[in-house]
Length: 195
Image 1 (cartoon, rainbow, N blue to C red):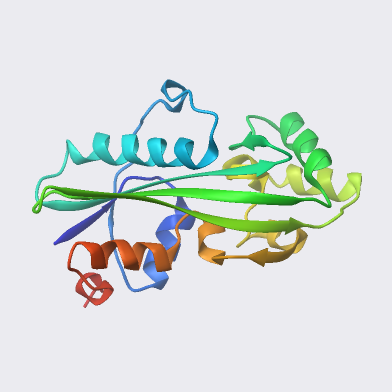
Image 2 (cartoon, rainbow, N blue to C red):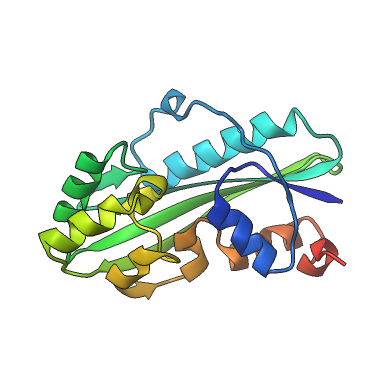
C-alpha cells in the first residue's frame, strides 16, 4: 500500500521520514479561501479533508493523508502570516501567551473506500520576547512558512516555553494520531516502514 502525503510541508515529510515512512508527496493546490469556517477544529478538519480528496483524484489504490494547522490565540485564528509586517504584528500580539495549535488529519483509504477525519490539539506556551528578537526572527523568513508564525523544530523552538499535548502535532502531523488512524483501517505503522 502506497502512502501519499497531500502536503508540500517539508516539516511533515521530515516527521514521517524520521518515523521510517517514505511517502509520495503531492501538493494539493487546494484554494484554502474556499473554506469559510470560524471554529478552529472544524476549519482544520475541513481543509485537511479537501486537500486529501483533491490529491486522491490523482492516485488509485493508495492511502492519502491530508493535514492542516492553525494557531488560536485570544480567540483569533492564525495560519501562515502573509508577509513580514503581519508576522511581526502577530508575534507582538501572542508573545507571553498560550496558544492552541490545532492540526486536522484526514486519511483516505481508497482500497477499502474509507475515510477517517480527526484533529489534534496542543497548548503552546509562548515566551515573552523583545521587539528586537521578534524582528530578528521574522527576518530569517521561517515564520512565513508556518501556522502561527513559528516553527517548533526550527529557530521558533527557542521561543516556546512549554507544550501541553502532542509535540509533533505542533510541527504539523501528530504521529500518535496518525498511528491510531492507521489502526482504524487495520494497518500498523510498520506496514509503511521503508525496507
